[in-house]
Length: 139
Length: 139
Length: 139
Image (tube, rainbow over all chains, first blue to last red; front, top):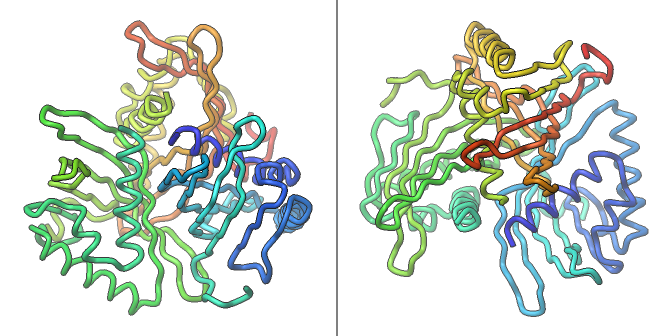
């Protein structure tokens, strides 16, 4: 279970870091809801998730940066119906074109994962709280 | 075993990051010893651990920072009697109220874990060496 | 499998961080190839790996820094013949003698692991891409 969950996050985050917005959105259910504390409104469904990721990928490319997500500190709770509640932390690193690396953001993630048609894990609900963003701001 | 140990550290560190000093101390045995290279003396027992954590939580709040611990690089060794020796690394991140994140500390942890009355893991002995603190300083 | 792989990386990287160049090289096969995007040529075989690690350890010591590798985001794929393909990320932290910590490098690793004579994991092929180093530079 731990290995499967950790592997899921590794693949999912890598798609984002490699600019594959659509592939990233495919790791969510069709009707997924994703709330990020730095965004004014949640993203709902794969079309909005893809659009949100595309915009983020474009902004990062325009800034000449490479971003990488490192997710860890998994707390995994099994719920009835094959549902998993996962609490995790993600550190986002940014590296400039000149090779300077830094911590971009520190995030806490609370996810609900379910099984897709081929038993693969999918995010049905995600809430990301970014440290340093006051509660209530931009939500 | 790996999943249980990793989950233990995730829960334990989260209590500290969320300001739950007493809950954090409860993840140690009653007679635990915790040596941190930046402190002049070890903390012994839950009362000292709670007091130490409370002071740290208050200082961080006074500085207007959010701290997060990320522990990984687990090397787990089983010893007779259900004892686990765990070597790990912890990176402590700090985010200011204005949203700037940075690496606060890089730490190496050497722990002895034992089982409590409900088979839960507890720290009996911890030694934390913080990088950049010369050996012998403040010990 | 996950636990074994994660433990392998923890032990391997620790040897480097503790300055044990030869012990680090021993975690590769005799004929291993290691390509790092910041180096002009691959390192081939344990003698070159040891020499490369020794030079790195000496340079870090001369700079008065402590480096620590944190590897995670493992994607593990089993191949026929007991071969493992591992994709991972490594963050390298640096701490100065005065105790200032920072992100030194963000790296993506693609490894081929095989079994040694005692079934232990060994790296046969490693490719490390360091973020912020333009493709084609110094290769």
